[in-house]
Each structure stands twice: as C-alpha cells, then as structure tokens.
Amino acid sequence: MTRASAATGGVTGALTVADQVGTLLAELGVGHAFGVVGSGNFHVTNALRAGGVAYTAARHEGGAATMADAYARTSGEVGVLSVHQGCGLTNAVTGIGEAAKSRTPLLVLAADTPGAQVRNNFRIDQDALVRAVGAVPERVHSPASAAADVVRAYGLCRDQRRTVVLGLPLDVQAAPAVDGPVRARTTWRPPRPDAASVAELAALLDGAARPVFVAGRGARGARAELEALADRCGALLATSAVAHGLFTGSPWSLGISGGFSTPVAAELIGDADLVVAWGASLTAWTTRHGELTAGATLVQVDDTAEALGANRPVALGVLGDVAATAADVLDACGKTAGYRRPEVGERIRTDARHAPGPETPGSERIDPGVLSAALDELLPLERTVAVDSGNFMGHPAAYLRVPDEAGFCFTQGFQSVGLGLATGIGAALARPDRLPVAACGDGGLLMGISELETAARLGLGMVIVVYDDAGYGAEFHHFADGDHTTVRFPDTDIAAIARGHGCDAAVVRSTADLAALRSWLDGPRDRPLLLDAKVTADGPSWWLAEAFKGH
Image (cartoon, rainbow, N blue to C red):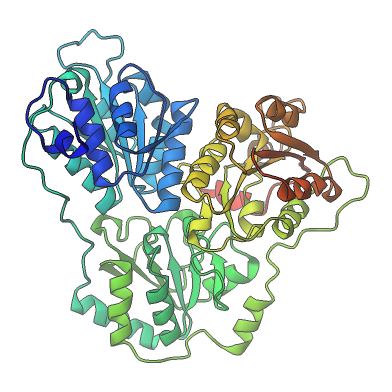
C-alpha cells in the first residue's frame, strides 16, 4: 500500500483510519513529531514514522509538548505531538496551554475513548479540557470524514497559527479507512490592510518626531519590510521577548521592550510619541504594564481581529499581515528623520546592557551576570538560546546574544517553571546547525529533569546552564520577609545527576571553572554538557519587581 493510496485509496481490509491519519499528515508536510506512546496512540505514531516523519520519544508528555512547541517556533513548521487518551493528554496540558497562549502552530494527536464507553477509566471531557487552556478542539468524526478532518485541523494550525487538539476515538482509529475527496489545503490567508488604515498609519508616521516599532512573534519573516519602513520614517526598532533577535545587527535596534529592557532602551521607548506594535500583543510584560507606552500614540498591526486592543487600548488598530502592511505604508508615507538623531544613535551604540559587577575572588558562588557575560564571550554566536522561568531568567535573556529571531526560544506565555530543558531540546532538533543553549534554574531543571535522559540518548551537543541558587529564587526574593522553608532547599549536586544520565558535567563557582566549557567546545560535542553554576542569591534580578506587579 503506497502513501498516496493510504490517503486516497478505497476501502481496504489492511488500512485503518489510524494509518490514514499518520500517512496523510506526512503527505501534508509534517517534518517532526514528539510524544510518549501508549496503547491509544501506538498505531497513529507508527503511521507517521512509516510515512517518513521523524519522531522523538520523550520521557513525559509535558516534555514532549514543550519540545513540539519549541520545534515549531524555531523551525517555522507545524509541530506535532502524539499522546495517549486521558492521562496522556492531562500530562501534556501545561505545554499545550503554553503553546495556545503563544499562538504556536501545534497539532496534538490525542487518542480518545470510544463514544459508547462512558465508564472507561481513561474517559474525561477532553474537548472541555482543551478549550479551558485556549486550544482548539477538533475531532476525526468517522472513517468517511477522517481525511477531511485531518486537513481541516492541520490547515488551522499552519495557516492561522493555532494550537489544535485532534481527538482520535479508538473505535474510529481501528475502523477501515474510507476514500473521499480531500482538498489539498485550506485557503485562509492573512488579510491585506484596507486603504484607509494604511493612509492613517502613514499620516501618523509622517507626523511623529520619535516613532518606535515594537515587533512581536507575528512579525517574524518581515524584517526587510519593517526595516525599510523604519528607515523611511526614522523609527527605532525593538521586539517583544519572543521575537528577540529579529533586528540583530541593526544600529537602531533597542533589543527587547519591557521587563528585559536595558535602562537606555526603556528610556527611549518611554519617550516615544508614536509606538507601532507589529504582530505584538502588547502584554503587560512588553509595555511594563502600560508605562512604556503611556506618553505615545499607540498603534497595533495584527492579522487577527481579536488581538487588536486586547491588552492595551490603541488609537489605531490595523487588521493586516505585517509584511504586507509595512510594504503598503512604505508606499504611502514620506521621508523623515524621526527618532534617528546622532546623539540617539550614540546612546544605543554604547548601551552596556546591565553591566555585571566584578567577580569576587575566592567566592564559593558566582554572580549570575558575571557568569552570563562570560558565557556570551565563550559560546559561538551561531546559537539557539532557550530560557526557563525563574529569578535568573533576565540574565541569559540580556547577555546571551542571538543571531536572529530563530535564535531565541522563549516558552513563557504561561510563565511556567520547568519548561526550559524541553524547550532547548525541541529547538535543538529544529536547528541542528546551531549550538543549543538551555538556561534553567535549579528548580526548573529538577522539575523537568526526566528529559535529561532524552537529550543524552539523542546525543545532542547542547549546553545546559543551571543557575543554581538552591531554591525558588523568585519566591524567596519576592516574599523577602516571609518564612522561606518552603522555597529553599539543600544544595544539590546536579552535575552528578547529569553524569548519571550520560551527560558531561561540571560545577561552576567562578569563571575559571568555565575551562570545562572550553574543553567541551573543542571536543566531539556528542553529548550534552551541563554546567551546575552555583550562583549568588543575595538579591532579586532587576526584572523581578516588574514581573510581580501583576501578581
């Protein structure tokens, strides 16, 4: 039975709906799938593999979900996750919720109990669970509709960047596959902006003395159009955290807007008289709860109507594809110097980020800023940086440069601790040509440590940096006067644990200990290197107060 006949052939005794689903997804272009196999998703996963789709077996469905999310963000393709019914899906819910909040094109193949088995021990209301975390429930309803159901769900992921959970009832999976006409693809396309909106935005840019562009994840792939427009109107360039790296190399780039902003970037964005958000959702984090945009006319460009003004009131909301809108506005606006004055350019050029203090000789712990700055100098620039959540997270985000928007993978829409290692694995598989770097806290690393075996088993040449302050740093700094018994822990030899999983590992207490990293970089890089960096815990990161304002 050929792959083509699996998708379009007639009723056969051998081919099941599970076979058809996996084969059709391979034909639609799925490049990689992640999951944990149980009885409910055994056959569909093997059909994916038989169709030529690479598959990574994770150790926990939560890790698999985040790997698939990170793979999609980094590669630009639809990520695929395969899980068992009931408990397999519930194990993956945090990762699915993160993907849904971040508009990741993720397709979850979730087995489901047969409709008649109301007492099945695996039975839960999976559709209700999926809706509760912001994902879209879809279903393979019958053998006759299976191919059309798959194409519809896949198209919703790919074309509208939605996280979709495709329910696969076991009785339908086991049924013989049935032929039926299948559209090759869905036809949804991002909208072109209307002429009136283009003219209004062009007029605002022509009249602005200090315009700033803030590009979000929806602006990925539109750098050329945005830079051309920014050159025309004299705008400074910034990104949301998830789009970090989009303007790498531009002399007018301010870096990240919001909680990770440098003082100079925050000042310049705060002084803007016009801020245009391009594919950015203007969250409290990106705008510092509105403080950065309070004095500016605020414009938002997005290809989804529901996103316009959802987080901040906007003076103008433009419904349109980012690249197309920027190109149309370029044709309509005049040339101005805008914000690009020589003294502004000099401030950007000499902005030293959050300069770390001097290293303390003989200390048993290393300053996280000193560590991060040293890592930035040692690691090749062609890197993919993944960052977990925690008190430490501002340091790798601020210090570790990335080559472009595909070089920074930030699964923090949910701000969940414990996703960093799996994020790094998924991003590593999406870009094997770059050095993967996963920055984690000790709490997050230990929470997701089951996937350390996955990284070692795959032979990933990745660097895992653990900012180890022996506790949940965000909590013991945020609740400075409280009882910290519940958030502080005895020191753990994480390096020894990593060696037990098959990784290379070293403890770092000073920059001299980074000699282990230099040696590993010179070697075959045939296994992960974990650096258990014993960092100081004498104060909160500069971004922490900002992060907790909304809590």
